[in-house]
Image 1: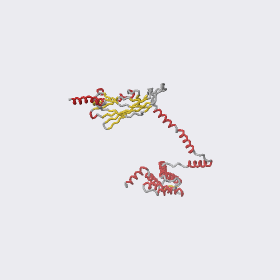
Image 2: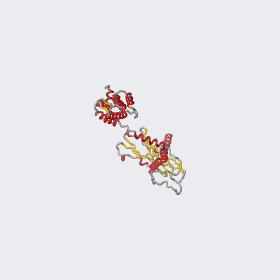
Image 3: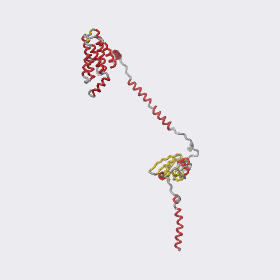
Length: 364
């Protein structure tokens, strides 16, 4: 009986000791769905006004599939409201990521320390607030819960002077001038190369400026310009066609077997009109080509309706040209000649040539 009492007394004395050795929150407090990891503080040695960066990593699961939602109350952990004296919260950046069914939010705080004493300071911990609500439940009806973050050590090596010249606690917001700086920088880079561009333009103009000509060279160019001005402008194909039509009117008015000056004048007009038309239609001809040269050129064209019509016109051109050169112009049948020339001109009209080409494609 005495031995049993001794064991009971020893157990009663050791039980409170083992309970006191455990952390208080490990005994009774259940683990909540939100956990906070306090990462390493940077830098650990600071001077007055240096920015201290502390990252808190908040992890919580996605409970949507279970019909619940976790809401982290970010407005309650704003940097200016944190109880971290003698530190001062100056900035906060939240990086939100998700890995499978777990949300990971990094709260990156910027703190500043202003104190006259050089020593090692402890960045106090503070609480993150959240609530867990059922889907469809009002936020006001959900219970607000909290989880604490960790602490950080900072070695403070520089103190402020007794009478500071600059009040670094001044809260006046001077604004951001980044947009104005970008605008003026762009203008500066735009205007800076303009003088160089102007010099280059002037040099190019001077290099391309024509040099003065000698008196003899200028006289030659003036004479050449006068000669070129006397050369008649080649009429277009439509003007040449109308000129041939007017000349044909004079040919049709001639009686059969007519001779003399009247015939010579009609043939001369037809020769000039036919030459202009052929040179307008055949761009490869030269202005100095003779009637026989034009006839040989037409003979070298590809066979077809166009070649046949041009051959008719060149035959009349050669015939009338030879009559004028021999001094014996004569027209045996003016009406037949006019009909033949008119028919050839009609075959050379664009729409007729297109129709003939289509017929040729289908073997017509």
